[in-house]
Image (cartoon, rainbow, N blue to C red; front, side, top):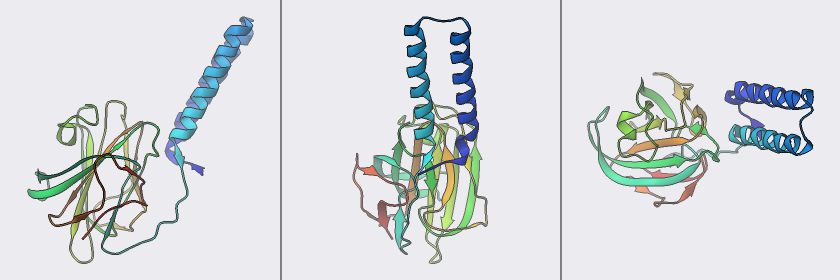
Length: 217
């Protein structure tokens, strides 16, 4: 287990905050009960930040024709829908909700070339809101496989997730399972797959980024 680079600033701020509140309590010689409450709160805050930014080491088996899950979380949507930004046709949408306790690393579902990328500023509706996919702050990424199949995936900010981070741009060559981004403090990732894709997950399934097979094409 390692600590993700996106968490360094948050961890530093947390440690500074913990130091200050405990130093103030010591300086004013607060009651023992108050100090113990602060100690417990400090430990809870520190552990929360460390677990949120954890980044487990994974041995990812690359498999052609397989769509790997881009994030840890729970499957909340599987439906045929209209994708209006890039494909402008019918696609199978699979959405993964990431709670604050999930690992928040985002991974490429397939290998290929980034044929499209766009960042959209927007709102911060709760991640399960029907309009969060189109109204919230988000990124849209399309990767083209060597067989010309294109997969669209979208990072979506939520009510708590106020920062989306991405590490890719158009024309980049990406490898299945490698990191393409990070979302802080819970949100969701949508996949838009070609009609006819064999879907290997069900609603409410717990999935693991870079491990669970979402589908096959």
